[in-house]
Length: 486
Image 1 (cartoon, rainbow, N blue to C red):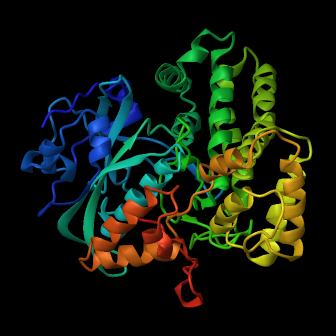
Image 2: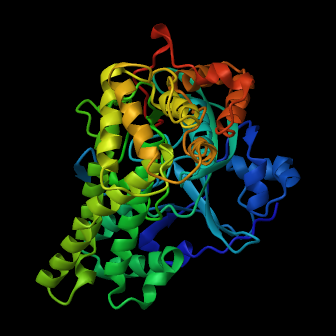
């Protein structure tokens, strides 16, 4: 099995990682293979399905050109700093360069103990592996920057948590596995040389345009801030809640990474939390912009030695960059919700229009996804009754104002509705469907997983056969808590 590896991270000094191979498993079996992604990466699907390819995906063989390693990083977890985390159950095999010249990390998750495992076993079980596969592919279909799954492999070995569970390995593809926590790792050790090397590496790989800036490290910080502002705005636009927005789960490349206790909202409310360990609501839906701002401030702190000739100048540069986040996020957020509402132009009262809609949805318990999708049909008419839940009350009054706002633009109703149908998905991976699918898979039935994967990777069309996947949960189906995959 040939992989076109060119491993730039492995060429950094060895204090950035620990070199080691994945731990082999007893009985690997291919559960899912992302054939479209494989072709994008320039990999032969047939070779991946063959025994030699399966051995690589399981961690039983190291392909030629790979330089497997576990990355070192630290992180703030629920606000508390942990100076050493690192890849405790993942191995970066190397970096692929695709036929189009793009560079991607190939990582095995659940591949055994590493020097960063602490008390963990370094393994993963099938449920969280399939959750990450499913949600990552759904996010990709929705146009949200994300890591993706190339394959899921059952190991033939049990993993012991509260009980024995089927083990699995995920092959994760990312533009980068460098995190804010990677910078924090070297900052905590006052390793200024490593901080400079890491910043130079990230610039060369992910932000080459900033190399020519007068202050390239400040330009790097500003670029990362911009990507995070866009990313979180996109999360909010599809009702996504990450669940563990720790700095070690914040990608420097601006991708969604680490799908643990994540979920999509059903009924809209900004205080919605799904993570079983987020007792204070730190990472609630509506808190995500504030947490992103906080995380980025931690990144700015690590970069202070690189941001100016004096401490005072460095702090001034960092503060100016961080202070720009709210404005950058607000612009990205308004743009995203204007698309959802069929608005082509920016008007000063748009924030109020959006805010009043969300307030009314929260008060009435309206379904976030279905509510916005219903507006696509309402946009086809300038008056007349609006579909549920917009027929009366606060939502009905809002529709009158929204239609008046639409009339101030020159777009036709058909143009508006078409724009909205590409911003408001018909289907999302609803949490009760995901949990039922994973339970079936753990019991040996993969058909529900395969069907749900087909549905959520085709999110924009009103297909009659998908109708049951559009339904919110019945009271007995509601899943109020999701769990970390460790």
